[in-house]
Length: 115
Image 1 (spheres, one colour):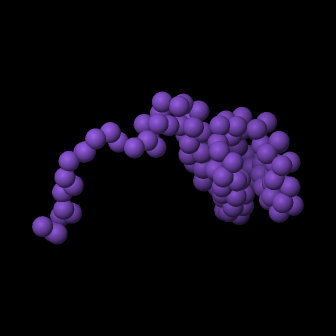
Image 2 (cartoon, one colour; image 1 turned 30 degrees about the vertical axis):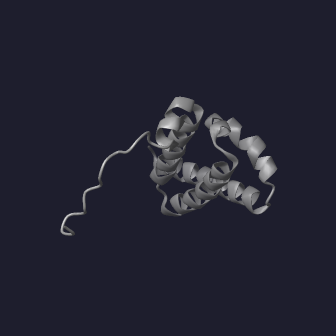
């Protein structure tokens, strides 16, 4: 990749990050709720509190990543939240991960060195 292209890409990322941050600061969460599913459709499966946490984290991580010139943290964040949405979208998996275990699971061993 040529240096000119890299600089242009960096400008676009910085612009996008600032625009997203301005939307969040505007406190018009309803507008963000309407727009974000166009960019990441899986957010529709996140509960409202998780959606708000995702937006907050996305803005913070995107700003930090843009400042570093390294978008890897944004990719990691999107992957992590997408996996959360996958859990919420699957009722069986959600029950397995959040439900109460059935019956007594037996004694819990003492941590090493605490016996």
